[in-house]
Length: 429
Image (cartoon, rainbow, N blue to C red; front, side, top):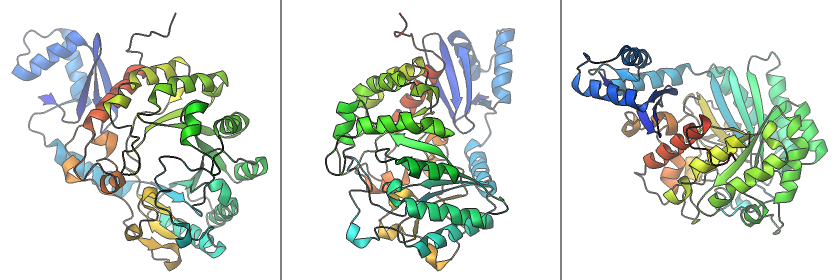
């Protein structure tokens, strides 16, 4: 027998966590037990194993953390991956009826490429209705039962009329509630008129994501108003005002080498406003790119995360686990822009050669999703990153053969170590 090729080992002071990424299985062993099992797997001699060690080996084997030596795990995983993709009942759609935005963030992926002269400022009502028809019929054709619709942009609040028309059309088409639709508003949080928010809530938009990138002196230098305004205080006030109205609220924090040292200070501010009681923190690393020096994918940034994750838990926040993929097991994953163009990913919007169709053509593609690169099938981190971000691979200065194994290892270890309190807690007096 041997360890599964998909198992990652995280060593702490007195224990070892064994994490199987493709099943999200996590086991923890005292370090002496781990060493005893490791020796057994290396030499096969079980004569001196204790009863408790034998029990641990049996549990690990039953949960496929330990596997038979001759098993072809990569082949089995690829078959299972394809089967799960074929049988998936979930889909995700990013609906972006306008690229207009009221911020000019320093690391914006879309903003660097958008030429507004080449786009409709707002989606025409006929295209909105075609978008809903396309999404609904494609969802039904694919046998999808659960559909996540992300109101996106640009800034979706600026395209409120289009969003309302789209949701109403989807509701009309889905009159028998054959599809369970979950709506999420992804907004920068700077403009949130009460009547607009209440209307979205009434329409069933009960999930909210808002971004803050640090305390005011950091955030205001990164997420800048279109006319140079400071935005932190306004966004924080909107979070406090509206977060209790939504079923789920995610505070996204984009982290890189320029703001990582301020994140615990931001957590304090959020805690002081009691946002830890009903908000989830999503800590995201800023992608490396050719248009900004900021990047989260470096030791300078990731070395902070033992402390950041630990501090977030200490302050009573729920924290989203570290993941680097968007659509691993979605049967459908697409984005629709203001002209009704369809893309495999929202980060491809405005890349003309990446358009895979248009909602006005009413041609329903049965293969709108990403595959898995064969180079990644046998990697222990494939359950975390799904082969990495396709857009980053093609559009950034990282290169075509990039891989962030070290980052995935550090971030996952930091997350689990903090979640299960395996770091000495310097925050307790």
